[in-house]
Image (cartoon, rainbow, N blue to C red):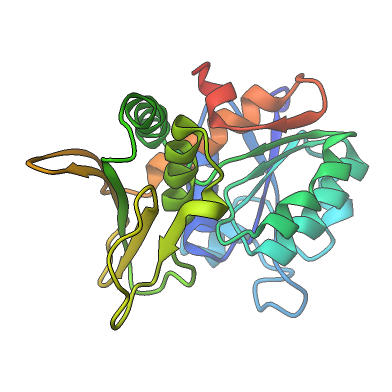
Length: 269
């Protein structure tokens, strides 16, 4: 086990953090060497195995990222935009791979990652699952084949606790559709319709977000024209798919040249 790549999970107490911990410890390709939580969190100083309701793992939750990163080859990060930007600088300082599954990142947040990517590998994706990344590529190809007479709508559903909308995956799909059409998503994005909005603008890419229950993630890309529709759909029923994808990204990133990558690179798509 000691010769396996050492991985760190930041945001250990979150839903994805706990799933990542279980996924890494169950893997025969990597080992968990550290867990990070924000300063003052009640998990700090405790064994993470006991924190998640299982036996001790010998990994103590810490708020000192630099100390933990010094013994790792990669960190997996599903936290919040500000925390991710800070983590990128610390990961680059340690020279380790930074896998980012954080959603809700704005263009300004993403731009702040670039300096870190000159020194270390960053793998960032709105969604880490194989199925979603295949859907993204299909969306780009279908959008490229159809003109603006085909309206594009991205509809997504998630659990009631999700704090950002549209989801990072929905935006990734919208970006793929925009790329297929050769336009900027910022110029054609239409989301949050309410009230008397007027007719739909030709060429816009619309977004709708549904929140409720324990929905893991559902995404539809609808291409609608007069008399016909094409619907591309992905349904996630277990968030373990995201953890498995993130683990794959971390292992792939080890040994790559510094730079910014995504799951298309990891999956060879």
